[in-house]
Each structure stands twice: as C-alpha cells, then as structure tokens.
Length: 496
Image 1: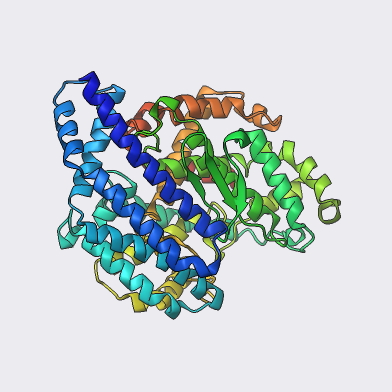
Image 2: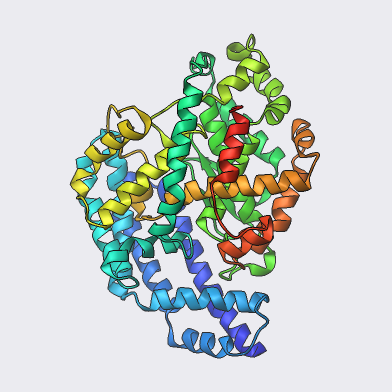
C-alpha cells in the first residue's frame, strides 16, 4: 500500500503541476498578456487542459484509487481525505469527453477577451455570442451529472460541494427579505457625507503603497506572494509558496483599492496557511469557494470596517493623504467607511447591500440554465432586477451586466458562494470573539496574530481535507449555514 500510495501521489503531483501552469497562464492573461496574443494563449490553455484531463482520467490512476480506497484507511486520515477528493474528481473528469474539455478551455479564453472588448465599449451584444457559447457548453457539461431539471445543481456543486438550488432558495429567500428591510431602515436615517473620499486627491501610488503595508501587517507573506494590477481583482494560488494578489487602483475611490486588496489578502492567507504536507495533492485547496469567500469577507468586512481597525490605521491613512483628510475627524471618517448606499458595482458595495447583488446574479444564472429566459434577455433583466432589488438602474453595460468577469470564464455557480461566504464569515467571527475576548483590543493595536492564528488553527491548515459542512462544524460547532449570525452582526454594526 505504501508503494501504491507513493505512485498515486506522483501521478496527482503531475496533475497539480499542470493545473498550476495553466493558472499561471491565466494569471498572465489578465495581468500582462499583449492583446495580439489572444489566439496563442487560447491554444496553450487548450493543450494544457487536454493533457490535464488525460492524466486525470488515466486507467492507472483509476485502478490506484479503487485499490487504495478499499485499503481501510482511518476515515480521519489525510490518505482517506485525498482518496475521497480524488474519487469525486476522477468520476467527474472521467465522464467528460476530451472534446468538451478542449472546447470549454478555448471558449473560456475567448470569452475573457470578448468580455474585455465589450466592457471597454460598454456593449453587451459584443459579449453575447461568446456567452451563449459558454452557456451551451456548460449546459452540456452539467448534463453529464444531472437531469435537465437539475442542471444548475451540477454547476453549484463544482464550487460548493453538496449545494443545491433548493438549499440556496431556503437560505436566500428569508435573507433577502430581512436584509432588504435592514437596508431600508439604515437608509431612512438620512445621508452620510463621504464626499471627502471622492475628491480625486488620493494618488494611485500612495493607495497601492498603503494597501501593501496593510496586508503585510495583517500577515500576507510577500516572500511567497506579490501584488499586481488587473481589471478585476483576484487571487491565484500556484502552491502554498506562490500565492499572488491582484488589485485595482481608482484615484477617486481610495477605499476601493484598500478593501479590494484586503479582500484578496484573505484568500491569500488561506492559501499560504495550508499544511505544507498537502502540496501537490487535492488537499492543497480550500474546503469550498464559500469557505474561501468567508476568509476574504471576514478580513474585508468584520475586520477592515471596524472601529478597532481604523483606530490603528486611520492616523496613518490620514498622514499619507493629509491633503484630503487633514481636517476629517475619526468619527466622520468611520461613518463614511460604513456608509450604506444602494450602488451599481458589486465589488464596491457596502456589506449591508452586497448580498442583494449576489442574489440578483444567482436569479439570472438559474433562470438562464432553467431556460426561463434567453441570454439575449440578460441585459434588460439585469437592469430591471437592479431597480427591483436596489432601486437604481445602470446607465450603461459596463456598470451593469458586464461588470463581473465570472461569466466570461465560464464560472457559472460561483456567485452564490460570495453570499455563503458572508454567512460563514459571521459564524466564524462569532466563534473567534467567543474564544478570543481580547480580539478587539488586539486589532485596535494593529496586532492580527491572534485572529490569524485562530483561522490557521481551525480552518487554513486543513486545506480541503474536510467537506464544507464538516469544517464548519469543527470550527463553529454547527454544520448548517444560516443567516442568523450574519443578520445579528449587521444589526450590531449599524445599531439596529
């Protein structure tokens, strides 16, 4: 068995290496790739996808999985966890024809370039053909695992193991009603003046420098990572020793850069904290996308919007941008940081309205895959739902249906994990505060080792060893995602 497991780890290590190389090419595609290299990059990614698929479905790998799965490993052992993840992935990959693997890779590469062109021109119709192609291929993919009536469930399961549309409806239905009520109550208090954050006097280099200093203090290891610029901020893991962040700088919106970087830092801390023994195995990953989002949202919201966080950082932020903030008191600044306003852009939405953006996207995705409406309807439906959910209508496609990259990469089923991440983050935050009574004081003094240590011990180090439900129960005592902790947190934050 030891010899067989060593061979298995060698095989899956090669698959992990190919995945890392593909991820590196995709990272480069969004950061540095020249426009004329579109077709070349698509071919490269297609070749790597085919190689990865061939190795992931080889007869030898299948035999090793079957033989070792029958060996009787302790259910809580790393070996058993690797085999559980491998068995699940092997069955999914085995059902996919090589033609479909190559077609999806090529369509995703072309989809990103089409999205960038359409977004620049603020014209959804330029993206529509690529999106229709991606949806058709993803429907074919999902049909390999689910009957037509449950196509969307197969896509959800790629990002959040075991999640279904029925379960999301159970969670989101009451959440949307209560969160909408909370938003109305907060907005009814009257406007908050944040004009001093929108005067354009926050130079780009200073924003980026401050963001770098902040995430370094939080715990991001620059010896094993870096920060670059991209249209849409994201984090990519090529292994625990190479976890990269991208961010976006907008001179007139300084908190956008800082909070986006802290958000991505949350993802990166998770990646850098996984047990090194899991390198080049399926366990060198997060438990789920919802869990990954819980880490980014916890740092962005529970930490970086708190009074304690700004007690330490505001004097430094004020000194760096003294021309814009010299006369702004701490209390006025904190009010602006936590301003609630129905806005167009998801990544800039406040934490009270953010989930409404996600639930809007979920309804659209589900409707497209249920064939309730057509891709051609998406722009008008998006605008109508923005009015229904948030009371505002996008003035153009770039600030509407084209604002996110996820559909361009074929990541249907991803958006709900952002809202699930918010709910999980609130449950984790409640547990952390119960176990670390000095946590607020530590943050107010610019010390984050207690919180990071709690997350490392209870979440990060386990990687993908446990299912999302198992990890949530280990960390919080409950395996069920619900909105109570999150809604309680919002009521406390906004004194409702």
